[in-house]
Image (cartoon, rainbow, N blue to C red):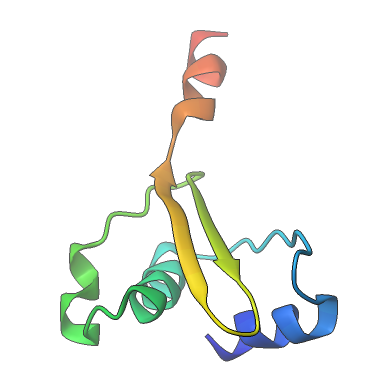
Length: 78
């Protein structure tokens, strides 16, 4: 979470930043911004190569999407 906030501070509100990480780290970040207690964050599903989208500004954070794998369907079909 600290790294996400540091990225926000370094790039400013409205910047688009890609972060690539392992599922458990992403679960912790998403869980934090959703207010999910740490012992319940294991209920979040973050698949390999999925996309999770957050908006984090100076005053608030919003989770726009979690575990989106739609882009993988085109890869699997090829």
